Image (cartoon, rainbow, N blue to C red; front, side, top):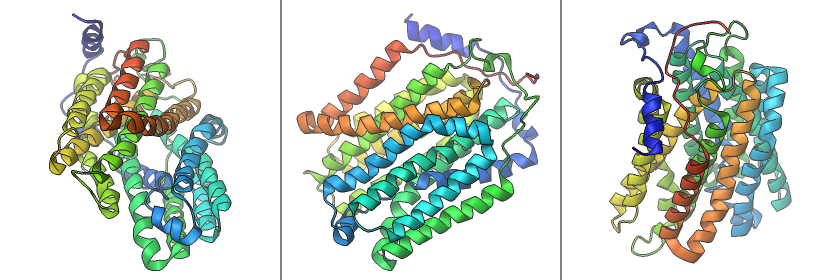
Length: 412
């Protein structure tokens, strides 16, 4: 038996499953917490890809070149990655609730600034500032997962967080693309600012950071006792966004060429393949409880690679189906990692969340650049080989941690 299969077998034995009626005991406030998490994560994440679908409008209204349009996205992802460790420290000092309110308020003001911005320099500075403000909100949300009083509730909230990131990614791409041509640049970005204002109100009224003392834990939730390690979670986060950015950077080029020859509008709608993942992400809690983090991650990887292999076909429907499978696997794995992070961050959850965001978005920044180079030299197959090489390399250096699946209450 291989080493990886031994590890997976060990994860399967890492603890008893929850009782069959465990879900029935979910407190009534848990649903409210999930809705607040979805709303805040949607608003917080919507700023990341604001300009990705606005290339023609940026050229028409501001005279930007294709390279300058790409720089607006790179500035945001790099700003997010660089600011994430500091955001973790600030969140730890201010508390999750205050950090979330500050982050959402800053993002709303920066969107209002974009409405009045003129020229590439102003847009670049504001987009970089948005990237630096985002981790304050996202780190606060991730920290609230770690503060949940049980594994069952933490899994549910982590799924809600990923649901919000999916909705935010789609909304952030589609809403500006729909509004700017119809109502103009200024009104479109004031509408995005209003979205953050609504999320700010939602957070002020409904966000609960969770218990700050006498936190209910399990022994396998402690670092060094067989639970998930920060090294493994950070590496997984880097690999996830590296893979997603690499695939979606290159697939647009592939679909724009024969035999597909998709239009710009059709390529803009490509990100709708993220939406079917919403149903699967909500099931991540049951899957992790049943088989553990390790096996759930392995299953997600297998589904993802089945989807990527399908993209080698010459039939559009098969390619789109493959992208749906790949996207679903990525977001499912993200939900698993978000919960795993809460199991290994008991000493300093905010700092651990900041570190995770750093590696996650640094992976995305590197993935986009590396994929563009791979496409130039080797085409779509080269992009897939790049993703496989990155994932394989990280697997060699990171031992998959034993899953933590107990829900036995005890006080730390």
